[in-house]
Image (cartoon, rainbow, N blue to C red; front, side):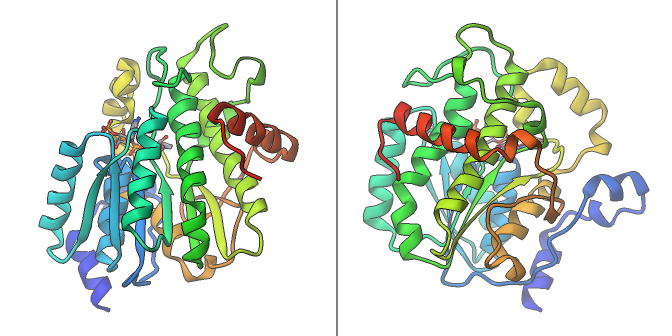
Length: 315
Ligand SMILES: NC(=O)c1ccc[n+]([C@@H]2O[C@H](COP(=O)([O-])OP(=O)(O)OC[C@H]3O[C@@H](n4cnc5c(N)ncnc54)[C@H](OP(=O)(O)O)[C@@H]3O)[C@@H](O)[C@H]2O)c1
């Protein structure tokens, strides 16, 4: 009951709003009161938006939460605001730039040296509709950060997750996966570039990665699921003026970051999901996956291509 009270203290009341449109937009709320004392959680992109709200919720449940952020200063500000909201929060900030495989490797090396367990990994960070740019390693930014960066991070931490089992991996994808397809002939959009389609491709890659990893981890007590958080009024639109205007105009119909974090929190803590793996969730319930997100052949091919691009051997 202590948890229920604490959640009540910091929770925005919009999900209980008297306005029907806000109640509808808010979507489902994670009702689990599971505690995470003694558990370690790693969340990428936790300095703002959905990641920050997820970090706060899991910290309130007693977890040690490691916030992996590319900008440590912004990360520390977010950690300070989490501590201000909940003084007992055990939150730490570590530097991780998913657009640079050297940064990912350095992060993982230090992490494995200093952290003994990892029970929940939340691959949350993401970019959307940015102008054509490449990561340090020459990958197109969406596929590089949203998929390949997280693929490498998970690969480097998978041994620790397995040793910490029961453990959970969450991949924050999107409804946008429905409009994506994996362009194996031009994964980095060098032939033609459309920022929206590049985002959709990367979010489809998230769904395929979660399903393939779940299949490969069968029987290990490490589960993997993907999540659509809903349409959330966050900083994600920062690269698109049109999207920023649309999100501002229609903000009352969108989820707040707190509301958007509910499905991630649900998949991280819900007792009934302890053995559920390879599924996609939205509004704290199983959700539809587009046919291209269910193709075992595409998932397996993407796995091989990702390994090749990253120079890793992950069987
Ligand atoms: N908002 C939505 O409507 C929506 C809908 C469906 C899915 N999603 C997914 O939800 C996830 C979280 O999005 P959000 O809405 O919370 O957006 P957000 O507020 O923009 O947060 C994105 C986070 O990712 C981080 N990030 C970006 N590039 C990075 C890199 N190279 N290395 C490390 N971290 C990096 C950002 O760090 P900086 O602050 O330093 O840039 C930020 O912390 C994303 O995966 C997104 O695709 C969002």
